[in-house]
Length: 229
Image (cartoon, rainbow, N blue to C red; front, top):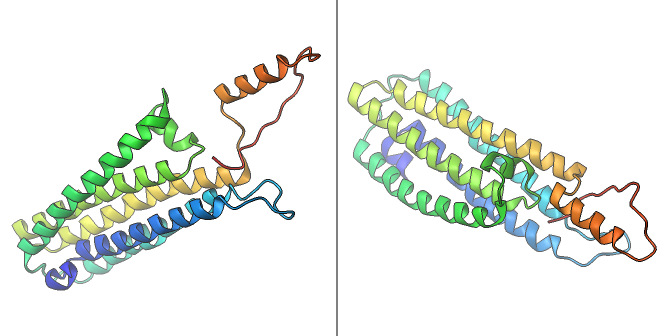
């Protein structure tokens, strides 16, 4: 609706991004539900990796619908520099409200992630977490919040300078941001799908449990792999 009223490419990019984000949350819920299915003869280790698979799909959706579409729309808008942004106050009002709501969503994801990340840095948590949903939602919300700010800056500059190219620059910036975030998620989820070992602290606990077993002298070799959070 905001795009229809303003003809702003930044508003269109954010609208598509919001639809993609909402769909992604549904995919994450689907993955979590399917991962809880009981093991079968064909899948004796269960379906835990369903969560990794659907998180990988989420990253691809964010990359294509969010990032690539925004870049395309921004470049397309540059070729139509005469198409001015109208009803700027509508765009600013909508984006300001969205920033408030998205900030609340990001705060929730931040608090939940802090409970499980331990002493790891935020970058380490995003790259090495064995629970895929939290890094995905955290980075998605961060990208959405930054994207809204970029859209607001682009539209404001377009109104101040009466140059619609600023709106296009804002749209392209949103696209580049989402592509970078999606790339991080794609590589991490691919790594989880292929199979990652247990983290150092968990490996020590496993070794200790085995070596404390009667009649065990020491553990010579151990291989571990996460098949689900």
